[in-house]
Image (cartoon, rainbow, N blue to C red; front, side, top):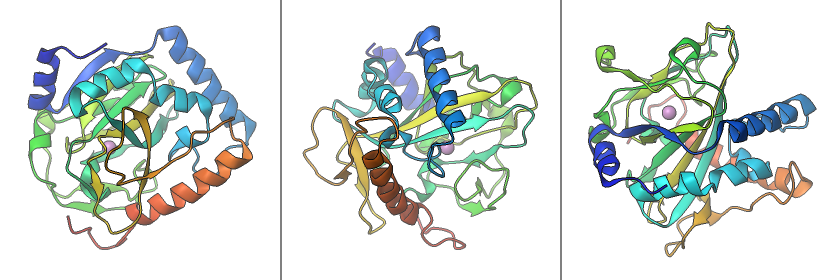
Amino acid sequence: MALAPQSVGQYAQDGYLSPIRVLSRAQAEDYRRRLEAVEASGRLPEGGLRSKSNLLLTWVDEIVRHPNVLDAVAGLIGPDILVWGTSFFIKEPRNKSFVAWHQDLTYWGLEPDTIVTAWIALSESLSENGAMRVIPGTHTSTIIPHRDTFSPDSLLSRGQEISVDVDEGKAVTLELDPGEMSLHHVKLIHGSEPNPSGKRRIGLAIRYLPPHVRQTAGMVDSAMLVRGVDAFGHFQPEQRPLGDLSEAAIAHHAEIVGASKRILMRGKGVRAAM
Ligand code: NI
């Protein structure tokens, strides 16, 4: 599943690659069933799907380590790979949730920007149900100032949005079938519209980085090594879940997510100086 040199060149130019099939349709449907079973169980801790669910659920841990995903990611960031975060981005049918135009790196405090998101579709993600849209080539720009809106309909932590007009005429919609993924650079401008359709839209975003990346916010950060070696030790190692929603996994997740929230929400109300 290694990326062709042509694909690596295309990513360098455009800041994204899509679509890439990484799971069969049947595998994606099986993961969707597991997700919906855990949602129905009522056992998920608050915010459990929004942040680092790979620490809670063995099957999410399995997805973040999937060789097809890691082979493609390795082509972009090298053979040593950490998972820094995972978030399910779920848009219910006929729902106003949206993601305003933004650059992921804005509040993350990470340097350098050799960071890639794998966005894996567990349902169809189409224009009609709010698929991700990107502005090609914008990953080479600096971080544009963002404002925090804390909009209740925003799926982002601070409701952040880019504070200048984005040229929507250049936007490309990344439509995915279940089991396909897109890859995007941490500075690529992207967002998505609400879901007016009757189809639930489910994606898992996984943030991958090489071990030389550092947290510059002056706080301890953590990550999970999923391939190769970490010769830098910039991140406190996270623990894999040994059972779905096991007591140890829930306790570890709560501790880790508490620490990462303090990084993401630092200077709340004041634009982060980056
Ligand atoms: Ni984003």
